[in-house]
Length: 325
Image 1 (spheres, helix red, strand yellow):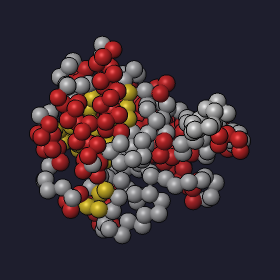
Image 2: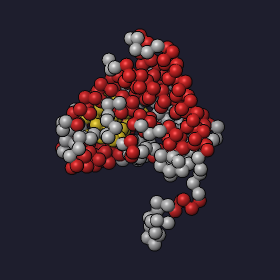
Image 3: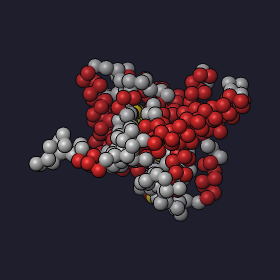
Image 4: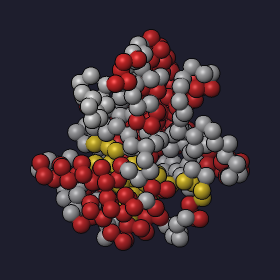
């Protein structure tokens, strides 16, 4: 088992993601936050297990469900919250919103909402690292639905033939929006798709952060040492709908309850208590600290300035329009 410091940091990171998602969900329901949300509740072990295996100088690419990835890679809760509020202090200046969070300063490329669209981008980043002769690695997060996109095939194939330093992390939550995976993939084991590219395909319990971390450490070491990419499939589950408008009529409440019994956060908390690596008081203190951090983030976001009307002309380039307007 990893050292106590790593275990407690892992627990804190998963809790930060969970509380962030619960907070923004409530703010959205209260009408205090604009837009829509694709929440990460239930999948926290995937982002944290992988990102804890990365170095600060490594990068990630993300999806339309990006909050957990961004937080796990180090994007501040204040910048995340402000972005969702559409404020100028947001991590994308208020231009991106929920599906475009990230911060290049911490190696989190601004998320790409097009399904599968971040796969060739991750391969391009990895190629850049190879050409610059660095030992950096890219972790590319994608969903099971993305594995049916042409961009997935092209990006993974190119990374494979050139042995590029990238780990393709598939968060298999069983549904592409509302479509069951078994209706669109004729494989019992999604990781077997890696065979077509000549790279390792690894399946791991995505509700067990320690299992994810162990598999990610191996895949990252392989990529960093020149061994090429790995297709890491984390079998996980989102406890909520695909987006805020999803009533989840395509899956049973019994299925949902069975997966909630495997919730990665209380699962790790139990392991920490049972092995004596954390006391109940320590875990409670972490919970209180996270709650205070979330309260500060909300206060910061609500107090931050909104974009001015003329800001809609910034970062827009078209014929006859100056780019610096």
